[in-house]
Length: 333
Image (cartoon, rainbow, N blue to C red):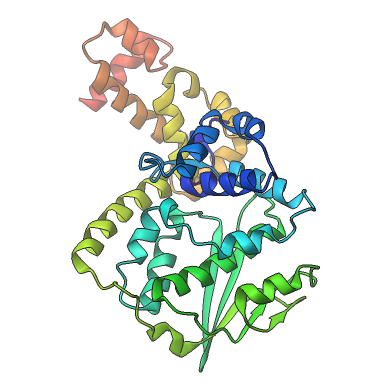
């Protein structure tokens, strides 16, 4: 499957994790180049404090992120990598969501803004917020077709807590931290990370905090003008990414990429790793038909090619004969 048609995550999240695993000798440059050639170069630029602005809004396949976490999970000589990586704040590798959080007024605003824009980081991240009187439970899990290992869960939970501390410039109180896992050998590292009671074999992975903590002010926050600019850009990116995550969005991408090839429903289904019947069913759930998407793609392509001879246009649009093309053109015009 083409990277553009897979579930995607923030490219900087992949680069950042690759840099950490490379630093710890969990992977090497050969591993990175086999995964994606430019990754090693991007990591090197980040290490030297170079300009990585071209990466900040780019997307990489979720499968690459999961593969990196699986490499970390399979290397037993550094089992606490998820916790320790999550506790490290790296300002030089901040993406749009991180910059947006710095314009928030208080920690409650930070949490709401983060949850509104979590699609920009990783659509598989799922946080649930439940207020129970004077305490609030932030539960976490991955909602994905991929198998995220334990270290990835630990990293997400540690990162949320430590980013809150970083933005408020103080150690925030925690009542308890729950993990569904057994207690690990690196339990002391986990305790130091959260400075709170850790409960293992729990029903959920969760951070339990005093509800009052959300009134804590963000240092240097409350920047309405910058927030408005960043929020508009975040909205544009969420709209684009959301379309990519739907089956219909991925179908549109493939049709625009090669209409003659992917206009054949069998070729399209193969590219999406599903049967034709599954493709039809999933499109129906999104309220569209393949014939509708194909017609829209042909019309878009026709508008770009209308100066070519009719026989060439018909071929490029995937029509079996010119007469079928003429019939469609009358409808479009």
